[in-house]
Amino acid sequence: MNVKKMKVLTIKQPWATLIAKGYKEYEFRTWKTKYRGDILIHAGKGIDKEAMKHFKHLNLEYPAGKIIARATITDCIYVDKSFAEKLVKKDPLVYKNLINEKNWEGYGFKLENVVEIKPIQVKGKLSLWDYEYKS
Image (spheres, rainbow, N blue to C red):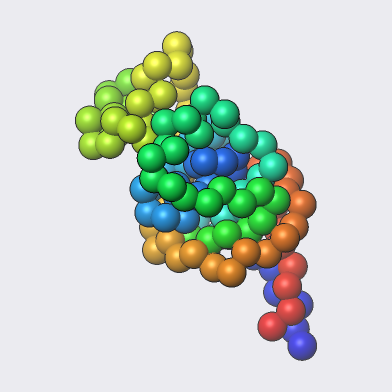
């Protein structure tokens, strides 16, 4: 068996599940990345309680401490007010907080080819991190 590595991004709930289910196509950070390629989406143990209320009607499960999806980072876009407004117009429920947070500036990681996977229990980390697995 070979040991392989794959990049992982830990994301609070409900955002990780919204990505896994195809509702959210950008993940936002204050830092940019040059990385382009496949990643795993890890649902961290942190929960955005206020956001959870907004998505209750979707009746989704929100696992914590588990890798729940695979995706591809295809771009890292600087999010200015104009871009944030376009996202809010496209999907006000998912992106409305982008313009509600005063003076927020950062980057949107464009996520494509999202596929849910069987959850894998693992402890998360900050930034992009490596998950080792045997193939």
